[in-house]
Image (cartoon, rainbow over all chains, first blue to last red; front, side, top):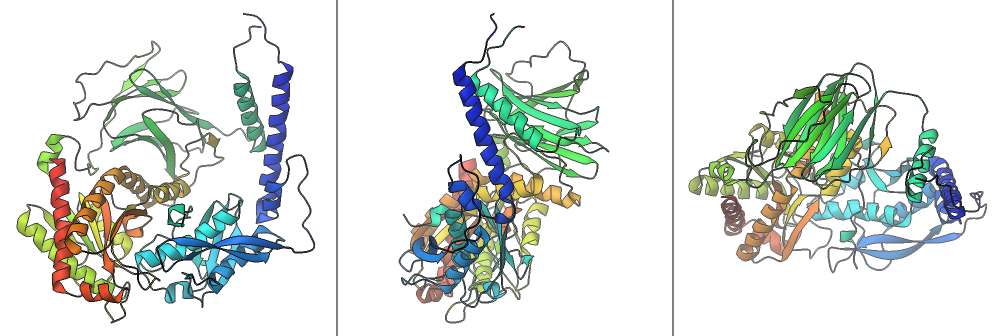
Length: 197
Length: 400
């Protein structure tokens, strides 16, 4: 056997992987508190993560509403204010879901519902804390609960890369179900089979 | 020095691993390692202990539990599971008790284990058994035992665990003994409401009582209802009733409701695997890829561990649940004349803790005025019960 030396190509790959790892680490570290994670993700890896922009631009998100024609969730474009953080963008998305559709779709969230709080953990779980109306005004039923849960979950995970899962809280605490069916005592991963297309 | 034939990829992977290890806490905490490797006719799992620890093995369906007793905490490190037969590793802990859960692709396996004291290793070889189970000693080669073998341990097999109803013809000959029927909702928890005031809890009970009567009249099976009158029963207790009665099938009966006024039809649900995994992962630090944990998740009591194991058990029954759902849905389609909404997977709370094949039947939409009118009629309720009953008969026949 002869002694192997590392070729320049291997050194290049080595260096590139180091950059990737560093950028990933930077994203992970900045991910705490949900600050500007989205921007960091879409930035080119060579640049350092940007400062929060002072002016809030518009940003388009897709909200998933229920259609009267089928039992699927249909996307509707909606402009929200960009930044300053993912948390604020996600809050607006949930509030817009509650406000309802402009295109005649059904919002499976009772209009009386208030978003109490939203926060994102560093491992990508968005906790969405809703007021009691989400349960009290909910019609119950498997299809209705599935629509409510996944309009929130699919909207948040679809639009915001740092959000991987969604945990739904009611009045600040964990609930078993909204109306006796779908299990709320766990974080949800999106169920895109409920989306149209 | 003699260089090895490492590929660049391997070198990079090693570097990344090293980097991430440095990123994480560098505290030199004792580490327990678990890895799997495939050999020609068996898959080998090696557990390397930080120190000599008492262990016991227990087989539970498609799971092999390695119970370890340790007063000092340690962390767990697993390699990505890339095995044709071993599906995943996970672990749970309560006080001094640590349980490593080795999930095997199916329950037809035989394991041989031995310990290598010098290396503080437990070696477990998993042999796939032919279908139907051929018994421990039949038709299989003896494991290749390394020379340094010092002690061989016969794992005690679990007796307390409900076996899944079918695999071989002998199991099927004994048949399904207890079926638990779960009338959805009850008491203050009324479920969905119809436009004309029909309550889901009343419909589900009416259908369930008819279904019970049909089964007991025609089949030699015991039927246990989670409720036989208008009372509150928690979702957890419904699952517990099924498990306490060693139910071999669990049918939850419901009537659907949607925000859509014209939503209609019948559908049959079974538990979504994704959700089960997520639940188990959250509670148990279930992990399938290379990662390590600085400290084990302390679970407060044994119930948590049981819940996790139940969750995992339920996920082992998913295939059977899916088959049962397909057959029942087929019968609903031919008997009810309602729209076929098919079978679906969703994270239903009531199905989560049930340790047997389990489905949830949505007979029709109480939120749809036309179907609400159907649901209150005795003839329609009888048809729903008949459809589920016929589905059960077909499913049971399929097993024998």
